[in-house]
Picture 1 (tube, each protein chain N blue to C red):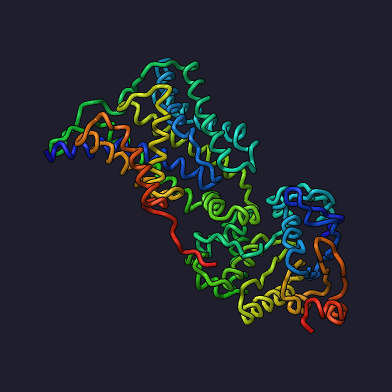
Picture 2: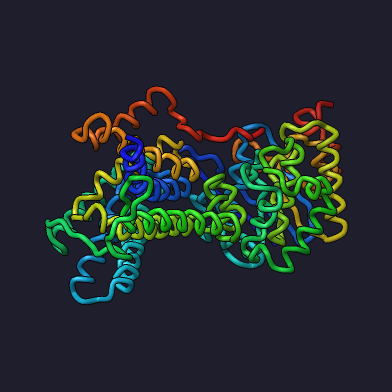
Length: 236
Length: 291
């Protein structure tokens, strides 16, 4: 479904990704783990189209999307839940959700279905419907950010650090909701996560990114058993 | 004395309504793009001057007004397409300087296309003054106030009731997130230039019967509208309207009670006072954000 080939991305003259390649098959959950500064967020932003690729290719659903603007990628079915949630703080929860379906004309019946499904997945969003998104707690904002991305009915959901700054119990709730949703709908997910144990539990496959390069990849259970991974990420 | 004060209040609110619309134009573009568009006053001039010259050529006034607003919208879009969009990613200060250049260019162009004279338009409903509590008020005053009010209502409905309007608010709130939900933020900026130009031109047409117009009225209007936007808190539409009316009132009372020689100076006192004492303005950013 997604094939990233030899992707290079930079900020000004500083190269951050030095030729990253990865694949995500339909229906998979794939995790990307790595230390701070490994280029995980840049990789996600480049796939979503909000950061330019210097070279390499990004193919989505058998189409080269490397140069496609972000809003066109959303139409094709790529949605990113960005690092730090980035909800529309002054707008209401309901408006945030409606805007999530912007490409599908936010107010139509499909959008209403989508909103009901998201409010069933995260009931707190129904309770807080009229509240400004900025007044929600961090965990609630994260749920809203995920729900907003899902309103676009993505075929590939990109999640960047969904556990950042959240209490462990809240993180667990969010990961459980994601796992439920995946089981029901078979949604394809690519997730970047610092909480490596949680990421390996959720994902079937995993890539390890280190200073802009993929240094290891494999099935989650194999990586969990790998002594180097255990030392570096799992604190064993 | 009270009749006199009432007179000042009416003239202050009238020019204030125009400053409010200019400030609203600043606010729309600033929120969508972070740019302070100093060519905002030129839109007001284009509205007034185009209507004057079309009317002089025999075009019925309502049609002339509509064409003038259309012309201003087109120029607003061209300003975005030819000057702002090609400089995408430049720092805001560079974009602001571009708009100052555009303002000088438009003024020069107006000198050639139109002329350097002052022009008036006939008032919409005659010029027999109405007496209110001892003050004399031109009927056109009510057109200016009513027109300004209508713009504010329509703009509010657009921003808060339509998905496209919410997309504009979303772009202002968080540009990255707006792109990620599939909003074409470049088009939102283009839209903000178009709408601001239309609002400016509309204000220019309404006020011309009272204050006259010429190729260079835009400069002072832009500065006073900017003072109004600063006073209200830049980026806040409610503040822009309140700031506009306040600057108008300060100007009218200042000119009436202190000295009319300083009429144009009061707006600049306002800018200085805001910058020194309350840089966030009267309605500075609401702090409901939690991280």
